[in-house]
Image 1: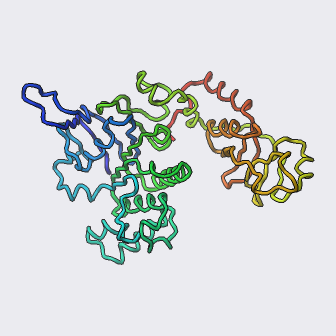
Image 2 (image 1 turned 45 degrees about the horizontal axis):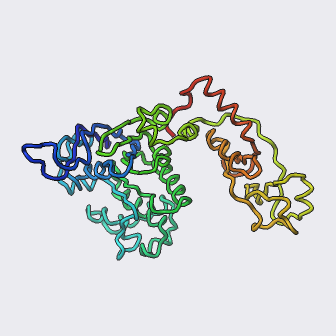
Length: 381
C-alpha cells in the first residue's frame, strides 16, 4: 500500500493574466513520476528546484495548480484533508516537536487524535522510542533536554506512531553534525528494511540521495524533472551536463558504493594494545602501528616516533576509516586512502580486525570489474 503518482503536476505562484497565461513563478513544472510502494524515492536538486513544494503537495499543505497526485490510484484531492494527513507520516528539519510535551506525549500525539486509548498509545510509543535507537529513560524528557540527533529520532518515531503507509521527509537529517547524520541515515535504512514504507525524501545532498534512495529524482530549477533513475544508473549514466554537474566530478568514486567487495587477500597486521611500551611499538619496525582494543576492535594508528613511554589514547590517530568485510569497493578504497599508514583497516561484522589492504591491491580489482562489465554490480544500495 502507498504508491504515490504525480501526473502532469504543476505549481505556479502568482496570478497569470488572461493575456499572458505563462506569467507567474513556476515552482514545479509538469512533473510526472511514480514513487513505488515500499521504496524510498529521493528528490534532490539545487535550491529553488521545487523539492519541498513537490513534497508538500502530497499531503495538500500546498495545492497543485494543475495535474493530479494519487496514492494507490486515488486522487488526493478526493480525500478529506484530515483523513489524508492521518495516513501520511511527516518528518521535517529540527524535528518540529511540541516543546511543552514530553518525548512520550509527542510520539502519542497522532494515535490519541485517532482515538487510541492512552495506555495502548503509550505502550506503542515506548516500543517506537526504543526502535529508533533512543534510551527509554528519555521518554519523560522535553525536546529542549535532548540533542539534535535525539530530537530527530523522536520526530521519526512520532511520524511512525500511527503506522502510516506513506512518509514524507523534508531534509530530516540536515541540521545535525556529519557523524550524527551518518548514524541517523544508517538507523533510517535499518528501520525501512523492517517496515517497508513508501517514502518520499527531500535532500540537497547528492551523497545522502545516493545512499538512501532506491530511486533518485534530480530536479532542475523551475521544478522540471531532469532524470529519474536508480542511484547506480544515475552515477554511471547522467542524462545531460546539468545532471552530470550536479552529481559531481567524483561520481565514478561514488559508484563504487554499489560494487560489492570481492574476497581479497588481506595482510595480517601486527598490532599493539593500549599501554604497550615504546620499545614494544618500535620493535615492530613500522612507522605506523595499529592499536586494537580488548575485543580486537581497531582503535587507531600510532606513529611509533610519537610514543614516549607507552601507547595512550592521546597518541592515537583516528583519521582512517574502517571497511567491512561485506562492504563495497568504495569502502575498501577509502579505508586505504584515508589511512595514515596507507594500509586500509578491514573488520568483520562484529567490528574485529581481520587485516589490512593497500590501494594498490584494490585498484586492479576496480579496473578488472570495469573491463569485464561496466554495469556489473549496479544495484540499489
